[in-house]
Image (cartoon, rainbow, N blue to C red; front, side, top):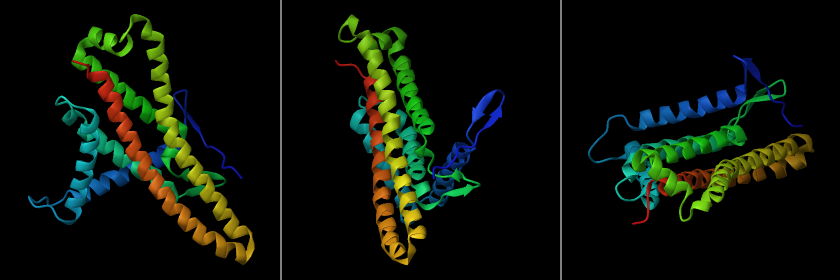
Length: 238
């Protein structure tokens, strides 16, 4: 049975407490991990510091792979934060789902298209803001919408819409389907007798491992595409 969606009204707006709680929990986990791993920094990193620096180097390489001409350092922190938040959000629902009265209040935030499309919108807004900041509004508009031809404007606008949808819905589809299948396997384990439980439990562990891999890949893909979109808005051909 599909879980119902709980909402509440505030100042005339409708809010989803599941997204708020899950997103806040993912953000807290990221904050705690970074805080703990960055204590007692040393010139020669070991242990937790080494792991943290590896992630920083990893995301910096992603950015440098697309953003050149000395602009990459401006987006390193965003890429690092985005990668960790999406990674934790993707995995949260695999290991922790809390519900009450038919409503799930803790799950993967990225299993809701509102969250993933919000992240997509943030990325595209940052890309366009950076383009205006570097090229000026006139130069940015010409580069983003009138290149290589003036009549390219409708195609450019349509491409922006496609980028927005695909960036957000790709990760949502993967995480949502993974959680749904895990729920199906869980229901089979507890409703099909001891024989089904014996079969379903190892299948659930295997699927969790595979979903962990998919969640990691999706975080990588999201940050990579983010770097590509930023590069497209701030870098012009010489």
